[in-house]
Length: 444
Image (tube, rainbow, N blue to C red; front, side, top):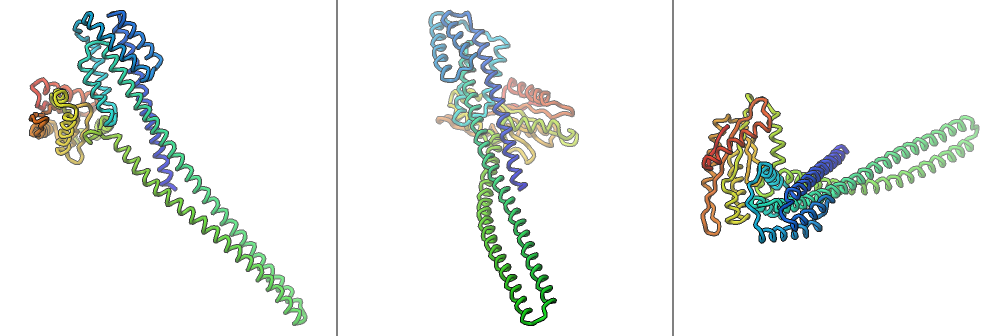
């Protein structure tokens, strides 16, 4: 029973996690809809026709319109932007700091979406369009489509939660059935005990009466008659008791066989559910493209490392990686070629780590490696070895050799460090490596 209760608790925990995940996506959808409203407001005043389209889009956004309503609005908005550009081309815009931050935030959100392989091309397309978006209307369209994608993800999570709830309900019904069986068995045992006690009392009563009658009997014939009558009654009681016991045994055996079959089915289903749950939990923490840990797993592991043992006892180094010129590879050879690059680079990282180390993909072409043990100088040496291994990879796309390199920022976790401070140091080192010519490793 304790193992079954553990399964019940695991499914409850799974439901709680799904509800929390659904809540996060609902929040992300709300943030994106606020971005749509702000972008619509920022784009007002360029052209009356464009203003009308932005007003319609903002109104639909305020009432939480779904994809079916937003899609034609996006089409008409695009047509209005094209018409405005044809009449009087919009001047080149020098994006302000807030606009750049908005783009970075949208790009980060798109990269962190835990989409399936079927939807991943959609996010990559949105990221590519984001890089070349020249006005607020284009940004509004990207944000709107991203909101639709997040809405679909939240609906998918809701369906999974309902399925998990149905499974939990079925397990609960089986547990109640087992509890009922145990109650029936206990009642049957009590009934058998009472029947046995009654039978014993009846037989002893006949023996006592026979003893009393035999003591008072004065003739042998009378004594024989009394003994014969009492023994016949005892025999009748015993025969009736035996019949009741046989019927009780048949009923108990049948009930036990039925419950044994139910338990066997429950054990089989529990094993299958355990495998499915373990697979889903593992898949939720892995990047589907490269097979390494995802951003969620990294955040959990990084928090553990920050709050772990003192650094003097167990040094931990963080290697922040970025694939050089990845956008050029995607644009020139297609996303399939970019996928192959990411998979091969991730394989290089995995081949370089040991048992206690950790590899994760935290963004489009960004990876993190956590090394347990080496100090900063040794970690930088390891990073350069991995960088050389990636440089030695040979890629050919469409018959053309393509050189793939990576840059890395290395830092060592310090005593009383925070996650933000450590990550900022690694990011600063990576920035130096990228602007120092790329295919470099820099320490901070």
